[in-house]
Length: 202
Image (cartoon, rainbow, N blue to C red; front, side):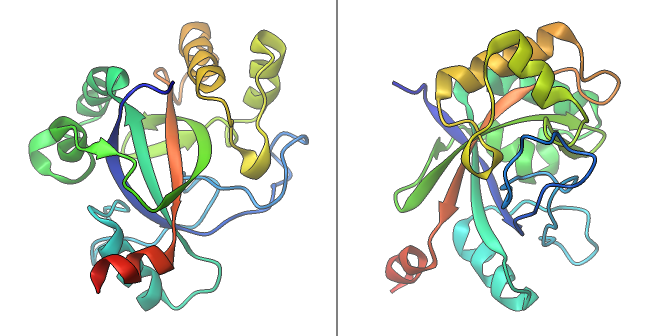
């Protein structure tokens, strides 16, 4: 049974093929919340924020962007991980009172919402305003596999929740993400279907 998850927000992202600098075992069609790997649509006019508060506004932004291959991703974190994430984000200069991601995490809205198709878990960490993924820092996927036996599956995501949390803990404890990321978490990603959005808005 998965622990309770809370809403981080929604991203409008492309899917990406594996780059030469990424681990060779990764599949094509990578799903990620990190702009190290995928292209993101900004939620504000000046491009400071890539997080959307709700799926409807994310879908509107996806349509307005007019680019093929964009998907609306829902992102959540385990409730138990939220205090550490908020502290890490605050250390990076992003206060919960500023709104967007930290404010949503602080209010603990339940995730996922009905209608989102669960894709899997991505190991991510916050660094100076951006989010790194374990697949963007060269060699981490292989190191995690050697240490824990955990490896990504379809879309480059971990399917088992316990495996994902164990791998995130190992990354944090081992400090192999230094100097980019010190605190790692398993983000639960869902694919928000456009059909579901239309049904909910009617």
